[in-house]
Length: 90
Image (cartoon, helix red, strand yellow):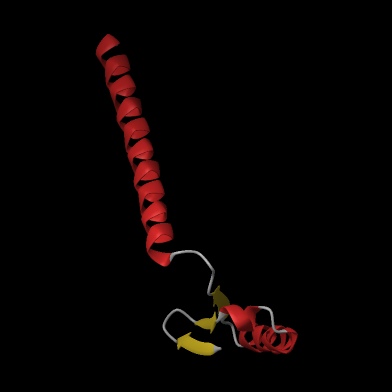
C-alpha cells in the first residue's frame, strides 16, 4: 500500500495492489485511516490494481470520453442553430 498526499487539494491517495485489496487487515486499517484524514478535512481516494489490460482499458476509456464530448458539442451546435433560426423568424 502506498500513500500519496496532495496538500494543495487536501486529498489523500491510497494505492493498493491486487493482493492488498482482498486483505481484511489492510481494509480495516484503511477504514481507520479514512476517518483520520476526513477529520483533518481531507478527501480520501483509493486506487486498486485490476486484472485487465491497462493499455486496452485506457484506450476504451479515451474513446468513450471522446464520443461523449463529441455528442455534447453536437447537441450544443444544434441548440445554437435552432436558436438562430428562431431569431431569424422574429
